[in-house]
Length: 196
Ligand code: GDP
Ligand code: MG
Image (cartoon, rainbow, N blue to C red):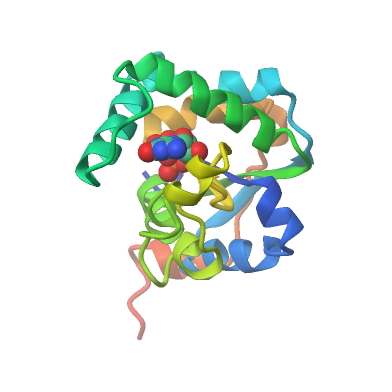
């Protein structure tokens, strides 16, 4: 449990906006530990695989997007979830392979959910103030759909432990993940530390 790992990727817009330090700082200061990192320019094949590691992703994301349009009283571009996801995936491949990204693994108790909480909701326009997506960027689905591109939301973070395990295997070799201790782990996790 204390070793739960999650995959985080600072997307090309995060790198171009010089926000690597700000983003990393938020994970560090909460007490998570970085156990792997590398900067790469992903291929479109790597991006397609990343988003479709979960065989349900195309259907679920398509359905979610259609519901998003309808909730706002808007007509979705298609009623077919897979047609919607094909457009989303095409745009994601362009966006995510447009320049370097920083792939990282962050470790610590509840790391998957803690990181998602710090990252905030997918759409920066509606993500909470205090989250990375809420604090550092202003993009909306309305604007990105109008311009036929991906939403620019600075960072990817795994949505579940299962997703994290698949994504870590996709982006990192086991020998790239470093097993080490930092002194603060004793204060965070050691049951014998009483504070006396
Ligand atoms: P995340 O885990 O918060 O990044 O969100 P998801 O895994 O649900 O979606 C992955 C990506 O699909 C997002 O980063 C967006 O680029 C895209 N996406 C998801 N939902 C929508 C939507 O409702 N509309 C549009 N245009 N794109 C979406
Ligand atoms: Mg996701």
